[in-house]
Length: 246
Image 1 (cartoon, rainbow, N blue to C red):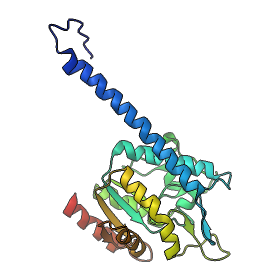
Image 2 (cartoon, one colour; image 1 turned 30 degrees about the vertical axis):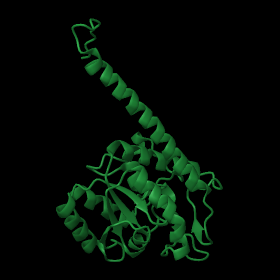
Image 3 (spheres, rainbow, N blue to C red; image 1 turned 120 degrees about the vertical axis):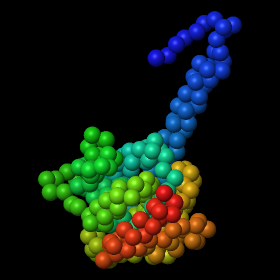
């Protein structure tokens, strides 16, 4: 309950009530400024020209990208409210994952159905599918990542060294490692994310993520990428990180 006191001689108006109002105003202003930064960031991603055999899932060139841009904005707003100081950096989106959803380390199924204990995704949070359908794609890497972060109580902001989907020539339903020139494109948004969210600890998931972070002069803790049989090593790496820095 809020108690209003109008006798300034007998109550600490300036020190208590006014101070709370002033703090609240600054918090609201800070939120407005941050939301604008996040919107500008998403719009910036949409304007980036990509190299051949790369799909920019946020681009204004594709009608369905508006849904993915909104999904990413919802995610970034949630992360701002949660204020994680750890960032998990992967290599690049996969064709069954954030190429479709717009949100790092998610699948269609995870995006709209969430995961027990996560309370982050779901249609009730505003997330939508770019391609509505009955059978939703799952992505093994995304499931492994979120299960592991939940298990060891690691609250991390997710991002990729290269934020767009690199694929093999003439095969958009494929994945490949990002090239050096593509990682160069990803450096600016990666650094922006670290700065916007005031990240203190960074986990590099895989060689390409580590390469980009080292090039930017950012200290990181490297773990094995969970794909291609790397699940156990990834889980071990996250567990050790939690023991060291949790």
